[in-house]
Image 1: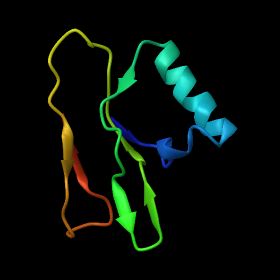
Image 2: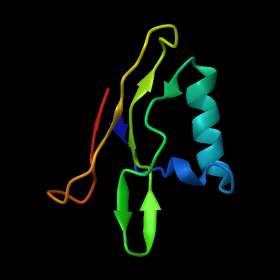
Image 3: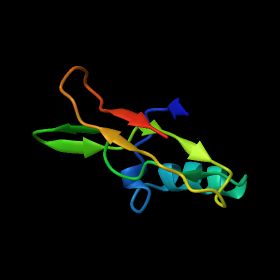
Image 4: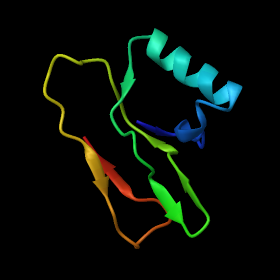
Length: 76
């Protein structure tokens, strides 16, 4: 898990973000949160990350939408 402030939603058009995600995946980890974790009126970002290296098990993960903090809560 981590809060690296790298927006994974930009991996298609930002080379450093793509490089970061490629490095994570090359080490055998996959992101389990793939939707925005921070949404405001002008933007949506995915900066709160959870990864797994166990793709064979059933993984239940998601986002808890709340207005308590800037970012939504995630679980896995």
